[in-house]
Length: 457
Image (cartoon, rainbow, N blue to C red; front, side, top):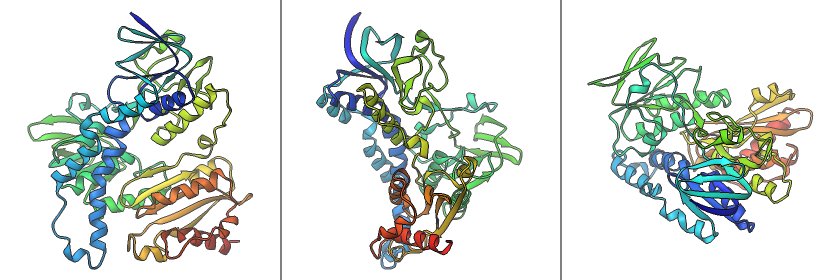
């Protein structure tokens, strides 16, 4: 058994883990990175990147058909085979070799295999023992959560991995779960010719966002994308037959060639040795705001594995804070406090940051909402013409500060960072009137919001 000494050992080379390792190495710390599957992780190969590759062609086709002078030359439907081929290019055909150069360039040592914590500051990978003089960071991510529906465990179901990397378009597809993954992949596969049925047991899809966001996405999925969307109804059981996979509900049976589960994620904390240091496995790893595990000053948990904010960009932010903490700095943690930015890449898009109106009120804030149409600018005459949507700022009446923002409409994700800056920077909404937006851009939406604020004063 070989023993290797490092300053930092990172378990998991997904977005959070690779960033933790990179920041540590760039700070001069001897760093090891352990990965049992693919470097760059779930987001690059099975989630964010392939799902956007599947969605983008349909969005481009829709925009072309909205543009006079262009729609006249647009004929036919999407070339599904070409879309899937391009998707495979985006995910490098599930080959992570192109990601290894940056690891080598930073002097990070990569160990292929399953990392298991074997005691304080010790990780074992096969026959190798990695001793971490400074810190161990757990960044093992999450996997699809399978609900306890009778028959589901015996069915050949898809999760996000099959749902983003399938090599053929299914004739029909049932999706369980109307969160971001379910809504995005319902739209994507429908655009490629699959007959999609989506079940959401809650009263609307995207239940954690502003009600109008879910309502607008529901309408588009039904009317524009041809999805058979059933809300307020769960699936009671699943069984497989020669005709396909059947989901039984209170309203009847629904059969499709494939069934995908998109009902949430669970942290990957099983079988990584947490018990060896007195921690429980199977659930999220509790951390403080520096992502250090209480009672274990040498142990950090970043990304989905801590269950705090399971988003790629937040995992990267957490890794920055974790490494800064190891280096003896105190960067603070404001992003978790205000609420992470998040985007659902459906059409219409949903982009939000900070708190919804209901969340602000629940937090005891005397909150109000400013709403304007997202197509109410001159720029909307040229980009996303005719695509409706809503822009909402949630404002603390007592301070005039923005505490949340939600945008729906055509490609509104690019507006999100300005709102995030305003929240983090605690910019009074009065001051935004002096941040002049260029004409004729879609970002003049900020002028419309400022005008709405003035009307209500």
